[in-house]
Length: 72
Image 1 (tube, rainbow, N blue to C red):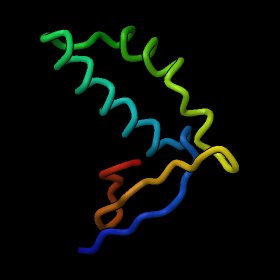
Image 2: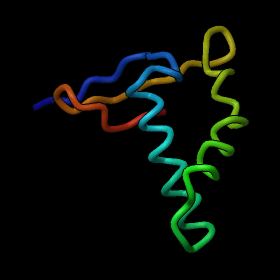
Image 3: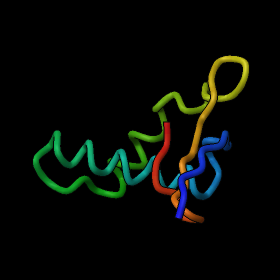
Image 4: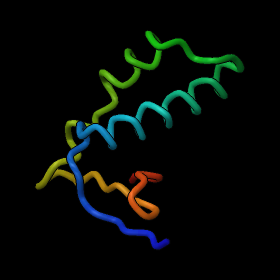
């Protein structure tokens, strides 16, 4: 399998899942306990991802084969 990287809307299903997983991991480590679904939703609501569209930015999803596996 190979990696591909492409621009994608920050609110696409794949991008949303990657962002949610990332926030869950970071918040859980910070609080030293599992983050709740509400905490994750609250954190993502004001994370600034809406600025990741041209001309102010761009959201990128990396896929390994067909599976979304990374983002930037």
